[in-house]
Image 1: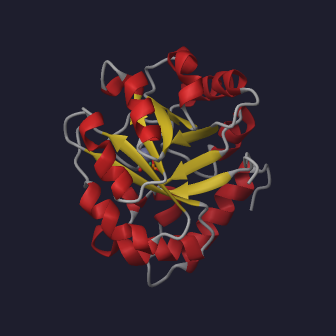
Image 2: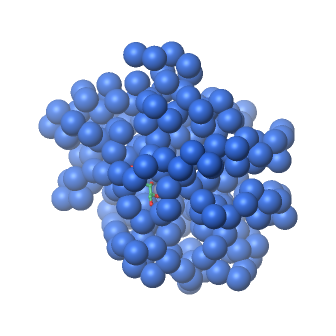
Image 3: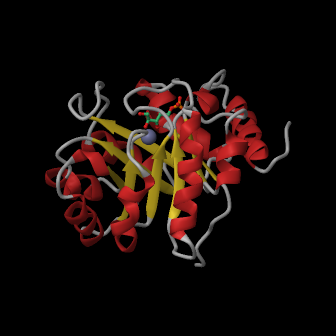
Length: 230
Ligand code: DX5
Ligand code: ZN
């Protein structure tokens, strides 16, 4: 299949009902989510803890499409096999998570997943330059990782544009993560992002029992990213 650079909405289940992940994943996909974004936090690399490979494996059967696993953990390497076995299609590690990110990206691909590289807001775009041949996705953090519902950091928009230029024709997705909503989506889409992660802005106001709201929220973000306001 040809590489798809059209805008994709990836709801982050960090904003879902943690007691109901299976139904939440089914609901967002039924309501138009392109990918499901899964935030793994260890209380060490980031000041919050979510869940690990066992939870990823448990929700995998409830996701038909792409399971996009964002590892906010350090170290990464000892856990790669467990997350790939859990069914991650894309496994994203942070450039800041250790001294050997090049090896980490090689190991992710060798384990059979697509490899993602995440950059914290304080990390320049050039950190990705030596790694472009090893990545399938670059994630620009538009908040400091650890929590949902934070404010979008505007200074990251030029970094998205810079990375888009660096990527050129390579089949690398450019993802933005944090504070993405109808107000911020146009700028990141214009800067060249093709995967928009959104937690609060997708799950706000809905539930697995009232999933139509998820659909409205997803459509509104997609429309904003396309320059159409609804
Ligand atoms: C932040 C996570 C994000 C987060 C986004 O550490 O990586 O995926 O869930 O949440 P919102 O969209 O609420 O900023
Ligand atoms: Zn994330």
